[in-house]
Length: 281
Image 1 (cartoon, rainbow, N blue to C red):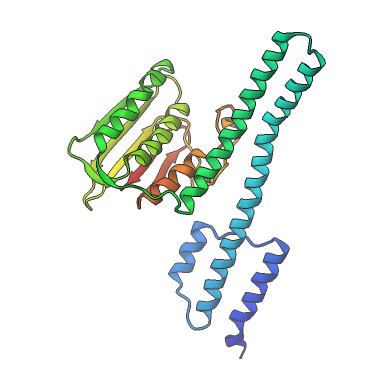
Image 2: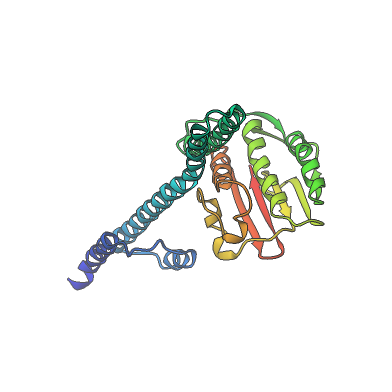
């Protein structure tokens, strides 16, 4: 009886931990251990419930973090709008001051609008509202376009930007989505690469018939413990990157677009050595 009831006891403990906010999302090592020890009997139910409840806890935590981050990031432009408008009203006799205040209000309102637009776009990708229009897509042409847009940026920062791509790589894909994904990845690679560094964009066909596009940099790199978290919306790795402009939405949006294209996006990185993002389609 004790053996048969143990999964239900475990279930009760999980719900109690969830209620108290003490349930943690299982780590990769924990998942691997759980998969190696296949559950039997009623333990199947216990294992499934554990995974589902842990994911629920993770979603709830992410939601709370997202709301906090949105409130924090939008509060800044709203405060600037309030300050600029109040200053102009106190000095309404100076037309130039009024114009400057209106310009500041417009700029900071656009910042807030851009963030909300990016969040809405991400939500559309995650919920499948933006259905990809797949057509024959020449991968080398998409890469060439994206790289051409960033050649001057890389040159100004003294970063070498290289391309290694075969000409005969054609896939059924959405070139607009693929372009947006590559824009984000190349932009990040250049941002986080120090002067005299190198960013390489490479495309090749794998042995499985898939097209693999890699964006490799010699930048600051990402610690192992952060590599899964960087794809979470509004997540910034640490304070050392806080001087880089952005909302922390780029990689989460890129991942959502890649999954919408039925592909995968993974990262391999070493702190102080560089990062390699691999997009497979």
